[in-house]
Image (cartoon, rainbow, N blue to C red; front, top):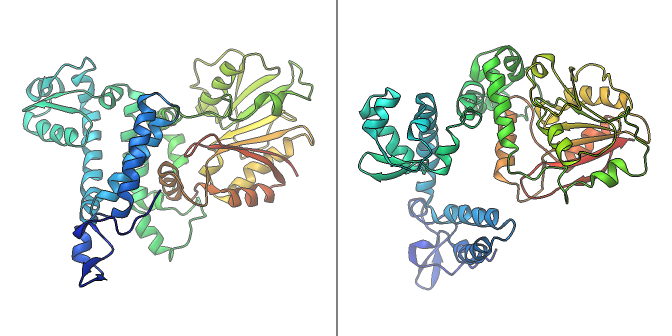
Length: 430
C-alpha cells in the first residue's frame, strides 16, 4: 500500500511535527494521542473504496479484502492511547460479558426473530437481576454483539443468533476452562525459562496457569465436557474456509488416483487423529466415486462418540504414538495434529507412519498452517501463541522441511489456497 509520509495535518503526523521549516520529533505524550500510522490512511481509504465496489458486485474474496483493509484502517487511525485501552479494557471485558451471556442462555432468550426485547423481559426469562443484565447488555451492544434499539431494549445480530447453537457458543467456556489461564501465564512462564522458545509438552505455561501436572490433552481425555467443547470448536473453526479437497486447491484426482491401481479392498486414505471425522466425511461427500477404503482413526474414547458418518467410512480406535496398524495405504492424512506437539514428539508420530508407508506409492498429507516469512495472518499468529502455551506451535516452511526431513520424508509440494488457511503439504518417503 502507498506510504506518503507528509500527507498529514498537524498532530495527525505521528512521526514529526513541523516547526520553523524543520521536522521535530513528537514527544511520547504527543505520540500517545496521535494516529498510529497516519501515512497509511490515504492508501487504505482507496483500497476500501475499491474493495467495497468489488464486494457490492459480489466478487469472490472481496469481503475478506474489504474486512482486512477496514481492520488495517482502524489500527492506523486509532491512537496508541486508544489501542492500550482496547487491549486492556475492551477485549477482556467483552469476553467476560459474552461468556456470562452464554451461561445465562441470554442469546436464546433474545431469539432469532429480529424483534426487540427489553431488559426486563430478558431478565424474567434468564433469571438474572435486571440491573446486572442491563449492564452486561450495554457492553455487548457497545462491542457489536447485539444491537441497541432503545433505552434498555435490544435485538439480535447475526453473531448473537449463531450463539444460540451450542456448537458455536461452546467456544467461550472451552477457552476459559482450558486455554485462557495458560495464555495469561505465558509472560511469567517465559520469564521463568529465561525467554526460551517452549519445546516441551511436559513443562508448559498451561500447567503453570492451571496448576496441574497434566498437559492439555490429558485433561481432554479425562473431561468429557472439555472434549465435547473442543471438538465442537474445531468443527466450527473449519467452517467457511477453503478445504484441501475442494476444486482448485489440491488436485486429488491427479495426485492420488491417476497412474496407480487402487482396488476396492485397498485403503485410499487413513485420517490419522481425525477426531469426529469432519474431514474424511467432507472428502467422501466431495469425492464419492474414488476407489478404495477410507479409515478414520482416533483414540477409542473419541471415536466411540462418532455419529452420522457415511457408512463406507471405517472407524477404528488408534493412538498415533503407537504402531500404525494400516500398512501401505495410498495416503495417510493428518489435519492440525502435528501443531499440537513439539518436534521430538512429532518425530515419534511420524516414525510410526513412515514404517507403515509403501515406498514409491504411499503419500503423507499434512494439512497445517505454513506461516509465511512476511504478512502472517492474525488467526495464524494467534493460534501460534495458543499452541505455545501447551509447548508446541505453528511452523514456517523452513521448519516444516527440517522436521519432515528429519523423519525420513521429503516434501513434494505445498499447496495453499488463500491467506490464513491451512496449506496441504504432500510428502513421500525420502
